[in-house]
Image 1 (cartoon, rainbow, N blue to C red):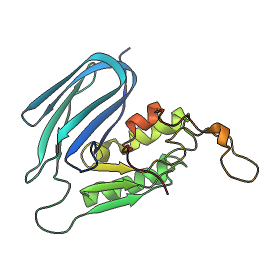
Image 2: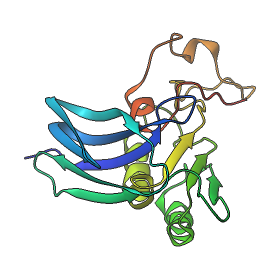
Image 3: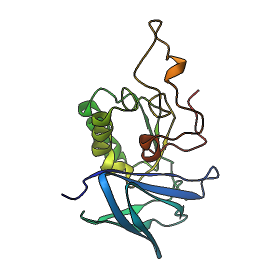
Length: 199
């Protein structure tokens, strides 16, 4: 059985906003290629996380891309410049969607209709980092929007690798933190910019 696509996230790949990353998350390892405008990229080593980085940001006109993942239908999308040349900048900001796909799907449907230039997720995507079902639900629900609008996600505790264990006082136990510099699978695919920190 071929790997199933969980989600695709478009995010900024550089602090200056001049490069993008397109990351696909799968249930199993696969290879992929990406046609980004006139550019072509290959991922010949099979992986569950396929990340295409250093993609040029569209400047004045949208960029068309085709993502080919082995065993999956081709994903085609147009990516708008992150800031419009004229008119208002549309930003969608949301968070705390860890309680299931129902409210999350409703919010995303409204965001798709608003066609934002940028999505900012403030955190609490799932209850804890290893919540596989929660992450799969998040990516499946987010796919129609996150694959075409630039996304920035704050590193909240589930993204930086804290476990589900909490102290009786409500704070996260220090022993549950991942070592500094380590990166979880879900952090790699959730659109978290490496310079973004939850404050």
